[in-house]
Length: 238
Image (cartoon, rainbow, N blue to C red; front, side, top):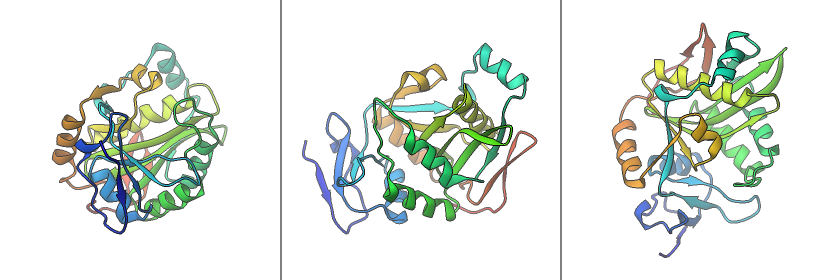
Protein backbone atom coordinates (compact mmCIF):
# COMPACT_ATOMS: atom_id res chain seq x y z
CA UNK A 1 0.00 0.00 0.00
CA UNK A 2 1.09 3.57 -0.61
CA UNK A 3 2.59 5.69 2.14
CA UNK A 4 0.73 8.97 2.55
CA UNK A 5 2.53 12.31 2.66
CA UNK A 6 1.19 14.79 5.19
CA UNK A 7 1.33 18.51 4.58
CA UNK A 8 -0.82 21.06 6.39
CA UNK A 9 -3.84 18.86 7.03
CA UNK A 10 -4.21 17.49 10.56
CA UNK A 11 -6.42 14.54 9.71
CA UNK A 12 -4.72 11.20 9.22
CA UNK A 13 -5.55 8.62 6.55
CA UNK A 14 -7.52 5.56 7.57
CA UNK A 15 -5.11 3.38 9.60
CA UNK A 16 -6.38 0.37 7.64
CA UNK A 17 -4.31 1.73 4.73
CA UNK A 18 -1.04 1.28 6.64
CA UNK A 19 1.52 -1.09 5.16
CA UNK A 20 2.30 -4.52 6.57
CA UNK A 21 4.96 -2.96 8.80
CA UNK A 22 2.45 -0.44 10.14
CA UNK A 23 3.82 2.63 8.36
CA UNK A 24 0.93 4.91 7.43
CA UNK A 25 2.28 8.37 6.60
CA UNK A 26 5.36 10.58 6.39
CA UNK A 27 5.73 14.29 6.99
CA UNK A 28 3.79 16.90 8.88
CA UNK A 29 5.03 18.18 12.22
CA UNK A 30 4.91 17.39 15.93
CA UNK A 31 2.54 20.17 16.95
CA UNK A 32 0.30 19.42 19.91
CA UNK A 33 -2.80 19.47 17.71
CA UNK A 34 -1.31 16.93 15.30
CA UNK A 35 -0.06 14.65 18.06
CA UNK A 36 -3.44 14.63 19.78
CA UNK A 37 -5.15 13.87 16.47
CA UNK A 38 -2.64 11.08 15.86
CA UNK A 39 -3.34 9.34 19.15
CA UNK A 40 -7.08 9.75 18.67
CA UNK A 41 -6.67 8.11 15.25
CA UNK A 42 -4.65 5.15 16.53
CA UNK A 43 -1.39 6.53 15.12
CA UNK A 44 1.93 7.44 16.75
CA UNK A 45 5.23 9.01 15.56
CA UNK A 46 8.45 6.99 15.41
CA UNK A 47 11.48 8.13 13.43
CA UNK A 48 15.19 8.67 13.79
CA UNK A 49 16.22 12.21 14.76
CA UNK A 50 16.93 14.23 11.64
CA UNK A 51 14.79 12.03 9.38
CA UNK A 52 11.29 12.89 8.11
CA UNK A 53 8.55 12.26 10.67
CA UNK A 54 7.03 8.81 10.22
CA UNK A 55 3.57 7.85 11.51
CA UNK A 56 2.65 4.28 12.40
CA UNK A 57 -0.41 2.16 13.13
CA UNK A 58 0.75 -1.45 13.54
CA UNK A 59 -1.47 -4.49 13.22
CA UNK A 60 -1.66 -6.17 15.67
CA UNK A 61 -1.31 -3.61 18.47
CA UNK A 62 0.25 -4.28 21.88
CA UNK A 63 -1.99 -3.26 24.79
CA UNK A 64 -2.07 -3.79 28.54
CA UNK A 65 -5.19 -4.07 30.66
CA UNK A 66 -4.40 -2.12 33.85
CA UNK A 67 -6.30 -4.63 36.00
CA UNK A 68 -4.30 -7.56 34.61
CA UNK A 69 -0.72 -6.39 35.05
CA UNK A 70 1.43 -9.32 36.16
CA UNK A 71 3.52 -8.95 39.31
CA UNK A 72 6.19 -11.61 39.75
CA UNK A 73 7.18 -13.01 43.13
CA UNK A 74 10.51 -11.18 42.96
CA UNK A 75 8.71 -7.94 42.11
CA UNK A 76 6.35 -8.40 45.04
CA UNK A 77 9.38 -8.80 47.26
CA UNK A 78 10.79 -5.50 45.95
CA UNK A 79 7.47 -3.79 46.60
CA UNK A 80 7.14 -5.25 50.09
CA UNK A 81 10.65 -4.10 51.02
CA UNK A 82 9.73 -0.57 49.89
CA UNK A 83 13.00 -0.23 48.00
CA UNK A 84 11.59 2.42 45.70
CA UNK A 85 9.53 5.59 45.96
CA UNK A 86 7.19 6.64 43.15
CA UNK A 87 6.34 10.18 42.10
CA UNK A 88 4.57 11.64 39.10
CA UNK A 89 5.10 14.67 36.88
CA UNK A 90 8.01 16.07 38.87
CA UNK A 91 10.79 15.52 36.29
CA UNK A 92 9.00 14.89 33.00
CA UNK A 93 11.74 16.18 30.69
CA UNK A 94 14.43 14.35 32.65
CA UNK A 95 12.50 11.10 32.27
CA UNK A 96 12.41 11.65 28.50
CA UNK A 97 16.13 12.31 28.41
CA UNK A 98 16.85 9.14 30.35
CA UNK A 99 14.63 7.24 27.89
CA UNK A 100 16.56 8.85 25.03
CA UNK A 101 19.83 7.43 26.35
CA UNK A 102 18.61 3.82 26.49
CA UNK A 103 20.04 1.54 23.82
CA UNK A 104 17.26 -0.50 22.22
CA UNK A 105 17.42 -3.29 19.68
CA UNK A 106 13.93 -2.70 18.31
CA UNK A 107 13.58 1.07 18.15
CA UNK A 108 17.00 2.59 18.37
CA UNK A 109 17.30 6.16 19.63
CA UNK A 110 14.14 7.65 18.13
CA UNK A 111 13.79 10.26 20.89
CA UNK A 112 15.50 13.48 19.82
CA UNK A 113 15.30 17.13 20.77
CA UNK A 114 12.31 17.69 18.47
CA UNK A 115 10.38 14.92 20.21
CA UNK A 116 11.35 16.21 23.64
CA UNK A 117 10.12 19.73 22.85
CA UNK A 118 6.84 18.37 21.47
CA UNK A 119 6.04 16.16 24.45
CA UNK A 120 7.15 18.76 26.99
CA UNK A 121 4.57 21.03 25.36
CA UNK A 122 1.94 18.32 25.86
CA UNK A 123 3.11 17.94 29.45
CA UNK A 124 2.61 21.65 30.08
CA UNK A 125 -0.93 21.24 28.74
CA UNK A 126 -1.59 18.47 31.28
CA UNK A 127 -1.76 15.71 28.64
CA UNK A 128 1.67 14.06 28.81
CA UNK A 129 2.80 12.54 32.10
CA UNK A 130 5.74 10.84 33.73
CA UNK A 131 5.96 8.15 36.37
CA UNK A 132 9.24 8.41 38.26
CA UNK A 133 10.96 5.87 40.48
CA UNK A 134 13.44 7.03 43.09
CA UNK A 135 15.90 5.19 45.30
CA UNK A 136 17.51 7.15 48.12
CA UNK A 137 16.29 10.33 46.42
CA UNK A 138 17.87 9.50 43.04
CA UNK A 139 15.83 9.05 39.86
CA UNK A 140 16.55 5.45 38.81
CA UNK A 141 13.65 4.50 36.55
CA UNK A 142 10.43 5.65 35.00
CA UNK A 143 8.21 6.03 31.98
CA UNK A 144 6.21 8.66 30.14
CA UNK A 145 3.19 8.79 27.88
CA UNK A 146 0.05 10.63 26.89
CA UNK A 147 -3.33 10.54 28.63
CA UNK A 148 -6.46 11.14 26.56
CA UNK A 149 -9.95 10.23 27.60
CA UNK A 150 -9.81 6.91 29.44
CA UNK A 151 -6.67 5.72 27.64
CA UNK A 152 -2.98 6.03 28.43
CA UNK A 153 -0.59 5.88 25.47
CA UNK A 154 2.76 4.66 26.71
CA UNK A 155 5.78 6.02 24.88
CA UNK A 156 8.97 4.85 26.55
CA UNK A 157 10.53 3.68 29.81
CA UNK A 158 13.99 3.41 31.30
CA UNK A 159 15.66 1.57 34.15
CA UNK A 160 18.98 2.37 35.81
CA UNK A 161 18.27 0.04 38.74
CA UNK A 162 16.94 -3.51 38.86
CA UNK A 163 13.16 -3.72 38.31
CA UNK A 164 12.66 0.06 38.49
CA UNK A 165 10.88 0.35 35.13
CA UNK A 166 8.66 -2.61 36.05
CA UNK A 167 7.85 -0.87 39.31
CA UNK A 168 6.89 2.29 37.39
CA UNK A 169 4.56 0.37 35.09
CA UNK A 170 2.92 -1.55 37.94
CA UNK A 171 2.32 1.63 39.90
CA UNK A 172 0.91 3.33 36.81
CA UNK A 173 -1.50 0.44 36.25
CA UNK A 174 -2.68 0.50 39.84
CA UNK A 175 -3.12 4.25 39.80
CA UNK A 176 -4.99 4.31 36.49
CA UNK A 177 -7.21 1.42 37.54
CA UNK A 178 -8.45 3.43 40.53
CA UNK A 179 -9.51 6.18 38.11
CA UNK A 180 -11.30 3.89 35.69
CA UNK A 181 -8.60 3.88 33.02
CA UNK A 182 -8.54 0.29 31.86
CA UNK A 183 -6.13 0.25 28.93
CA UNK A 184 -2.55 1.28 28.20
CA UNK A 185 -1.47 1.40 24.56
CA UNK A 186 2.00 -0.18 24.49
CA UNK A 187 2.22 0.24 20.69
CA UNK A 188 4.79 -2.43 19.77
CA UNK A 189 5.17 -5.92 21.25
CA UNK A 190 8.21 -6.76 23.35
CA UNK A 191 8.92 -9.79 25.51
CA UNK A 192 9.43 -7.46 28.46
CA UNK A 193 5.90 -6.06 28.11
CA UNK A 194 4.42 -9.49 27.45
CA UNK A 195 5.96 -10.77 30.68
CA UNK A 196 3.99 -8.08 32.50
CA UNK A 197 0.67 -8.99 30.95
CA UNK A 198 0.62 -7.04 27.69
CA UNK A 199 -1.26 -8.72 24.87
CA UNK A 200 -1.78 -8.33 21.15
CA UNK A 201 -5.00 -6.91 19.74
CA UNK A 202 -6.01 -6.48 16.11
CA UNK A 203 -5.84 -2.95 14.75
CA UNK A 204 -9.59 -2.92 14.17
CA UNK A 205 -10.30 -3.97 17.75
CA UNK A 206 -7.88 -1.33 18.99
CA UNK A 207 -9.60 1.39 16.97
CA UNK A 208 -12.95 0.30 18.41
CA UNK A 209 -11.37 0.48 21.86
CA UNK A 210 -10.31 4.06 21.18
CA UNK A 211 -13.78 4.99 19.99
CA UNK A 212 -15.28 3.67 23.23
CA UNK A 213 -12.76 5.22 25.64
CA UNK A 214 -11.75 8.56 24.12
CA UNK A 215 -15.26 9.98 24.35
CA UNK A 216 -15.06 9.97 28.14
CA UNK A 217 -13.62 12.64 30.41
CA UNK A 218 -9.84 12.60 30.62
CA UNK A 219 -7.40 12.85 33.52
CA UNK A 220 -5.79 16.16 32.68
CA UNK A 221 -3.62 18.45 34.76
CA UNK A 222 -0.65 17.61 36.93
CA UNK A 223 -0.58 14.13 38.41
CA UNK A 224 0.60 13.30 41.90
CA UNK A 225 1.05 10.17 43.97
CA UNK A 226 -0.37 10.11 47.48
CA UNK A 227 -1.23 7.11 49.64
CA UNK A 228 -0.89 4.82 46.62
CA UNK A 229 -3.59 6.75 44.78
CA UNK A 230 -3.39 8.85 41.66
CA UNK A 231 -4.36 12.43 42.42
CA UNK A 232 -5.19 15.02 39.78
CA UNK A 233 -4.49 18.60 40.80
CA UNK A 234 -6.59 20.10 38.01
CA UNK A 235 -9.38 18.54 36.00
CA UNK A 236 -10.83 18.77 32.54
CA UNK A 237 -11.60 16.90 29.34
CA UNK A 238 -9.19 15.69 26.70
